[in-house]
Amino acid sequence: MSTGKPIPDSCSQDQEDNASLDQDHAVLSDETDITSTFKEDAEEEFSELEVGDDNDNFQKASVPRDSSATEESSSRSRERYDGDTAFKLYLREIGQVALLKPHEEIELALRIQKGDAEARDQMIKANLRLVVKIAHDYEGLGLPLLDLINEGNIGLMKAVERFDPTKGSKLSTYSAWWIKQSIKRSLANQAKTIRLPVHLVDKISKLKRTALKLQEAIGREPTDEELAEELEMDPGRVARLRRAAIRPASLDSPIGDDHSTFAEIISDEKAQNPYKHLEDKTVTDMLHDLVKTLPHREATILEYRFGLDGGLERTLEEVGEHFGVTRERVRQIQNLALSKMRKMIEHLESVQK
Image 1 (cartoon, one colour):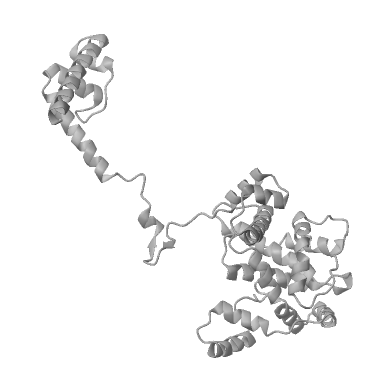
Image 2 (cartoon, one colour):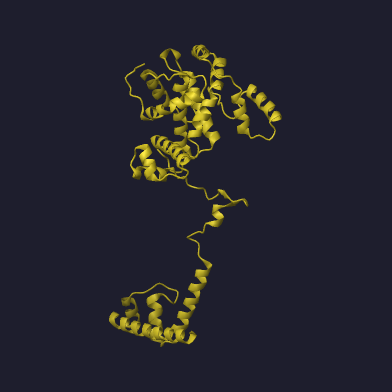
């Protein structure tokens, strides 16, 4: 395995979160950097990772449904915590799994390298809380929290399979990168109608966390300028990231308590407005009535020129050929007829007033 490959930007951006992750994950103490060898290994393996890979080899550690032990535990939980949601039950179950001590983590990792499936399952279950912690950072970006957790669990499984304690890194530090990459890959591929690059998903997530932190501090939603100052970023770029984070809404999405949808309240711009149709018909009928008061030749020329007879509009030349006159003569007759109609309309309006 070569060691000269640079660490990806997304990994370096995530390092600032490692301290808080380790604090929440009680088995961790002082931070230990991932070696370049570890990072290269992760990069090479993850470049081939697609959502749903290795389903036969990796039992998805998600909301309880994957093993008999988990199903029995879920059954007991349902009896004890009747009325709780599946997610709350899941949190209770993973919270009951003891966290690993450093020497236990090393021992399990060595057993996993020898193909011990039981050690692998134990290592995964002991770190599921880390996935939940990271998944919360990407909530609201297009996928439900449970989906984020499931995708993060895929990354955790990959990390557990490839973790080597002899390289001087802690599993939480190593797996955090895998978990985040799996979540970000899923968000980029599944969350939006318009696909976002993975690096944008990471920046939007950081923007969201910063916005929440500032909102708690100042008691209101921060402006683009305030976010730009906090993130050391141009305000215009902050605005573009905010726009990129907007999720397109489905017309079938329910709104309100009456189960109505957007499709039921948004007007179809291509559909004909019945009021407009009635108004147009009224005006058309009035024009026809006025045209009938004109001499036959003038009325026919207006009907041909403007399609009032239900046909296509005709050019001056076409009308002139029909009547055997020049196009200029047709124009003169047309203008005379329009002038007469204008005077009739003005007369009708004055009478109505």
